[in-house]
Image 1 (cartoon, rainbow, N blue to C red):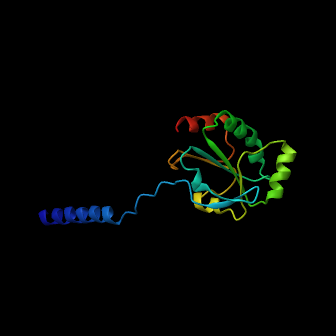
Image 2: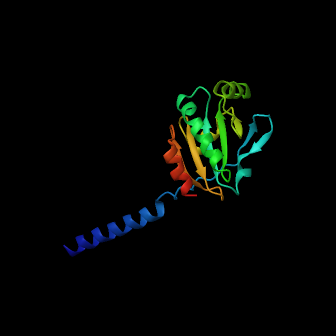
Image 3: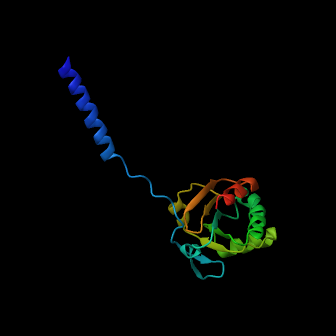
Length: 161
């Protein structure tokens, strides 16, 4: 009986030690990616250059209904928070689609970046649109929201900066 108990204790110890050493590493926290995109004017723009200020990245497309519905609210919050950079990263469209969108909606987006290959979706791991990411002034991700964003939700995310 004692021998059996020692074997069980040894097995539990070995299993526990193995679990400690074989567990996967903790996931690296997401940070503002270093990704060079084109501005609406055709200039290269590296997202990492936004570090130093809080940043709200919104991934959107002109054909996306929820994106269209949340855009006026995002612009209103951006205007009320000049200390936060709002970047609108268009997914999969060209500059003409964005210009037509701005004309149709009579909205003027402050910083539009074009991600025609949807590289941002791969880097930040979002499956659909819209997707909104809030980064602190060190470039660390503090909030992630997939789907249409409500004003109260965004305001709560910004309070945590």
